[in-house]
Structures are given as structure tokens and as C-alpha cells.
Image (cartoon, rainbow, N blue to C red; front, top):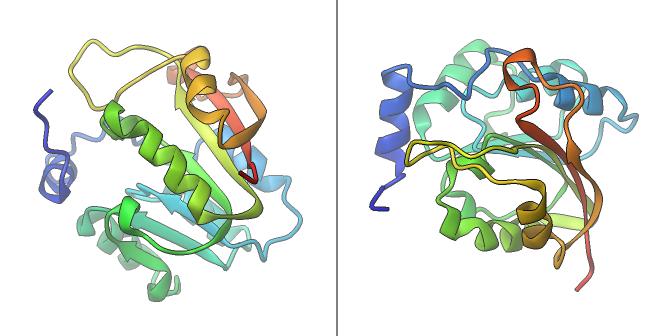
Length: 197
């Protein structure tokens, strides 16, 4: 596959409104997980944040130590226009694999599926590096295959288990019961705790 999923590629997707992954709001599984968190001081990262609906929800719910990251400047600028009170120093326009930081929680929402499949092991290693001891990777992954050459790129529970199990304790990796209607039966919910290795 000869795709160059660089900043220019993603910016053009936003400019052409080819953002089928964007449902216009934070999705239920992530909202419901965030609603259960009592400690709003957790340091949280949302990589591949795009229009960052999950960040909007989390920020308005009291999470102030929240960071968003995207390769494309375009959606981050749009986010800051809508949320001028969001700390600009917590907005990172950069390659996820070059990002440095330590987080208690990382939220996965249509980022994994946007990466070329040959980067998946690298993704797992980088997530492990970015998490604090006892840190958690939480979110949703597609549990289906896609006909087009991608992105998005899909998979299934067995594949994801094999990718994550060496670096993470799998707390939850199962069909998502509270997906939004268009994605019903096509998502898995993940709750993965960093292993000390």
C-alpha cells in the first residue's frame, strides 16, 4: 500500500469534509467511562484528536489537565476557536510517535484505525512509553474489515489481543454494548492497563 498519511493528507480530508469517522460529538462509550472518573486531576492525552469532541466533553466535565494531539493543524485551530479557554500549551500539533510526555489516561478514538497497519506494534510501544505506571489506555476500536484500502483500517478482537497483550494487562477487550447506532456491532471497547516490563 503506497499511502502517505502525512499532515497534508489529513488536512485535505478536513478541508474536503471527508471525515466519516467524525460523528459530531463525543461517543457514548467514552462519555460513560469519563463520567465514572472521580479524580479530574488525571493527566489525559487524546492523540489523533481531530475535531476533539471527546476533549470538549472531558474539558467541560472538569478535566483540566487534558492534552490533545493531531498531525494536522487545521482541526486543532478550529478547536481553539471554539474553546479559547483551553490551555494552548496543551495542544500539540505533531507526530504522535515523536511526542514526549507522561499520562495517567490515554483516550483512543479513531486514531489506531487511521494508522497504517504496519505501525500497530510501534503504536503499542509508544502508548506504553507515554503512560505512567498504572496508566490506562481506554477507548474503542473498529471490529470489522473495510473494503477500501483505508484509512480506516479494521481488525478483530483476536488480532487486537495479540497486538496488546505483551505490553498491557487487558482489563476489557470486548464488543462495545453502547456504541452509537451507526456503529452497533462494529466496535470493541478497550480498557488496557500498562504492564511493567
